[in-house]
Image (cartoon, rainbow, N blue to C red; front, side):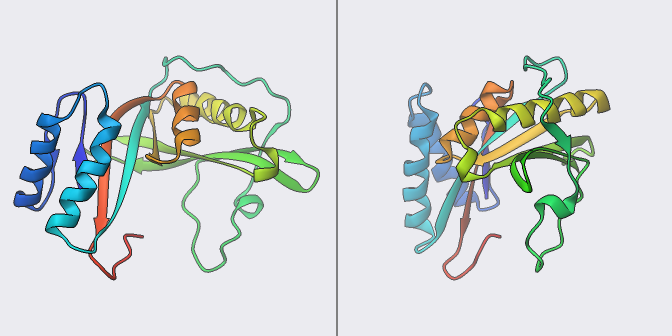
Length: 196
């Protein structure tokens, strides 16, 4: 894994040679187009770790007081884990808040906040959202995320959001809710290994 902050940090990477190669690519890239780094990084990893699969994630940050539109949508209701967790083979994460919008028996859109602790021991909430494909492009995701951010603000916490670089709708949703970029993470697996 490599982590890079376009706000002025170097590359954190456990492999020194690979970290040096990735850092060189940062020095040579156009600062206005950091998304262009992903293909260059992917190629450098493929050169040094043949057969590796790469994933590039945006890491975004939100704090109380950040601009976001408070949600007053009366359709938003608290949900339980049983309303949203269908994978019987995996234990669900610890959710602090789950809010959603129902359409009859179906959960059309839901957002969550999970408590976590950063590498410095500081608590935060990790935020995510899911909208059923039949309900997309109606503003439901933004409504439930805004409601979750209201709850996080009441808790006096900060929030993070991660999404794959190619998930442009997720990235745009986070930015529209007041999140700001703070880092990019590049993950890769050696051949035959699954990062999850």
